[in-house]
Image (cartoon, rainbow, N blue to C red; front, side):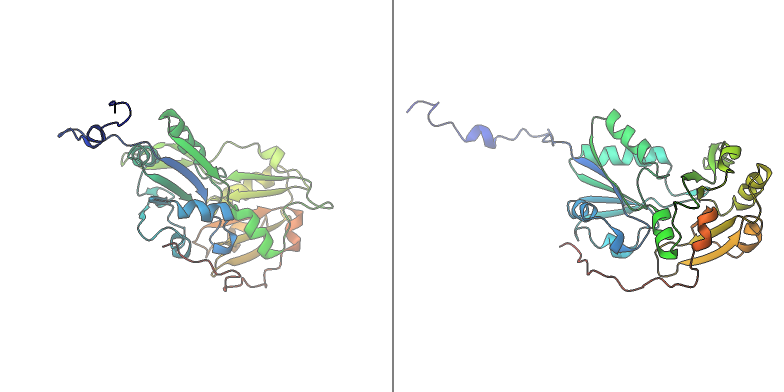
Length: 287
């Protein structure tokens, strides 16, 4: 028999000492974890978590959701709070790329939806620049969960023909300590102050007095209904029905992550309803 008929196995088994065996690059999954209730995860999010070698997650992602990753997966928190970041965004971007280059499947588990004030766009750009395959799995953003639990529709044929999502603060550079500084976002307040539309303000708790003042100055009535939802979809969810004029005073005791929802349709909110603390579906942790 010729050597072509029986290829030698010794060539396949040859290992050159001192050289690392090259590994195929892994992939990054940007996965929306939803607002907190595990039942609001998408099926695709659960499937992506089952593939994870590494889970890089936000601080607000619950242990119930993290338990759906394989038991052997490494879990790394990159929790962010306003002006207090465990990791800068550039560090998170480099981390995702480094793990993927090491041949790992990386799940970047983000609260809500990756592309709704979740910096998913920046992480996607970093992966593309490094030639890393990046998948995006949408999630239920907090405004949808807050509106559903309170029975306050974001759009309504009679009172809200549009809905706008804005952020309550915007980056304004870095301070001397290297942490991000925040300022008021540059928004078209006259447009946002028009009637028959719903304005949803993310990360707006500390900015609420300024938001209310801007909207009233731009022509929105002080009597416009407003709804504040703290910890949307979680067992400790709290709702406050107020008006634009009373907003600043009525939220003085809140400290958790909260959404501000302003507009005529918020008059339909049921602040007395309770959030069901029992999961509808039993999700099992992955082995």
